[in-house]
View 1 (cartoon, one colour):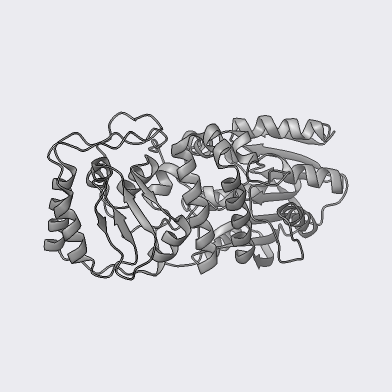
View 2 (cartoon, rainbow, N blue to C red):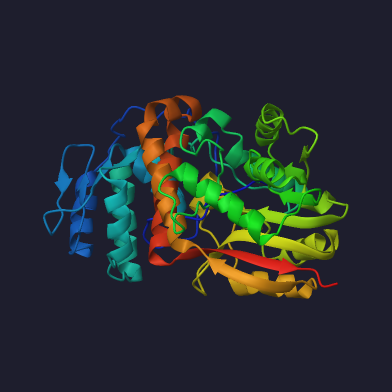
Length: 437
């Protein structure tokens, strides 16, 4: 558990196909030097792409120096640095293979923001079976003779029952236990990793995050001496704000050891150790009675098969008349998949935003009464913009802390997430509810 930001980017690739699962041992995190595979023949692939994709608002630079030009004279440039990029795509056709090539450094893009915008607006022509086979054969010839490259070192293949306690813990740690110092490079001073609120007058990221934390406290109508549960506490920003500004006692829980350790340090530094108890705990282990519960950026990680149990557990922890504030990302389109294989392996395994209607149904089934629902989609796009700028400004240090592969993932992830909120692919809502009585 942890306070989350947006973790479900609309990954900018062409249609998603079934991926191969014949994985081999991982490679080092740094990209291998470009090499020419034996009998590699990229010429036929270039010709086939130019024929099958006559409208190309992007260019492709190949490892042999040749270029497939953009048909409109502009657009981002895609650099295919070696035949190994094709090996990834052949081994796992679709989003996962292209993602592996990008993460490993075998594919590079001149401008990620421009590439995301182009791939959102560009419609690739439909390809029949014969055209697909031609393209595949040309890719095989371009790859040449040789073994497929190993998967990137940072890829996590989820194992075990989905949303079991052990699997959820592994998923959380994959995302958060990179380095506390890494997150510090792009978050605000309080290290709040969730949507900030700029629409109420804030101009800086620090002001906007404080606005969000105070808004949650006001909606929960916190009173001095009350007992509050913070589910998914992150690095402790909400717990510290609520205890210091409103005089409450907070039980704060997370599944990330790195977050728990630093959150305790933050609590001690604020002189609030007598009011805040930070614990490593799964939501299914929670017990006690609370006057109010904050669930900030947590609901996205529960899953459709556990959302009813989650809502029921939180409702059962509330005293009669107790209040719940659920702050979380929601999918806005019906029919789209919860998350693609790139996000599953590299960003946040098993995390999937539900529709607001599904979350509301779970809260109602749990016996809670909804008081208010408020959306902050544009605020999250702005928040992500600040995170992108800060991470880019500290790119060298971020790569030193997290490695080149993970840095590529985060640069793509934050931008794709921002685009998702801009275009209405995802939204975010604060739902205030209470337990009757």
